[in-house]
Amino acid sequence: MDFKELIKKRRSTRKYKQGEKMGEEELLDILTYASMGPSKGNTHPVEFLVVEDEEKKKQLATIKRFGTKYLGEAPQIIAVLGNNPSEVTWIEEATITASYLGLLLADAGYQSSWINIRGEKADDGRAAEEIVREVCNIPDDYAVLCLIPFGVADERIPSRKYFDISSKVHREGF
Image (cartoon, rainbow, N blue to C red; front, side):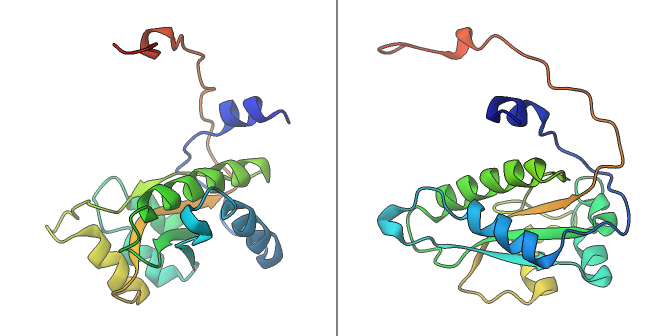
């Protein structure tokens, strides 16, 4: 599939077929390629935590009443982490990595979504990152950018509509 078509095809999906998980070898391959984005000084301050445990997924599903509810049904979840949050570019690098990850998953026939964790509050008022850290036993010197649940889609998502970007393109200033 052409890269532009892949971008158009990738849509956030929240319902997945049960029992259809990506194999370990394919997952490691995809995570390798997701990590190949630009990195300041080639530091690559991004790591992943894969969650498949049913109890942990149910706990993560309670972060927000609506926004995370479907995590309990996702076959697999990837937490995108910064392993050096003092590195000035960790957020940007983790964001690039997560974006690559979403496209690589779509290219492999899986659908995903992005659940922002960094800076978010859970329904109980705690930092969403604190809950993810607690559920998944993430060390304090790691930061959590987002959760990416994924699997084989079990819902029809409307095709992305083309839109005219010209009103958002500026030349030489505003």
